[in-house]
Length: 111
Image (cartoon, rainbow, N blue to C red; front, side, top):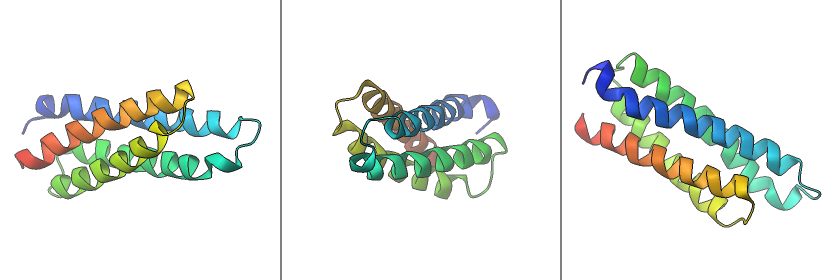
């Protein structure tokens, strides 16, 4: 695949990382963030995985399929957790995670 073919996946990864960072920060600002601990933790893991996947995609790493599949799994878990919370930032994060998982799987399956 060429860089152009990875553009949608790179954008999805970058958007997801930003949404996860925002969600974690917003969860921490809740009056009682303790019940949001798993959400915050998954947000941080997902943001990190998305950034690594984006870098793998940008340089067309030979391990890109492995990284993209792992990123998709982490995104799925984060989306599931965020979807359980009614806050707008959690719902937006869940949407971004689903979109990223879809793009990462598309790339991984094409390798």
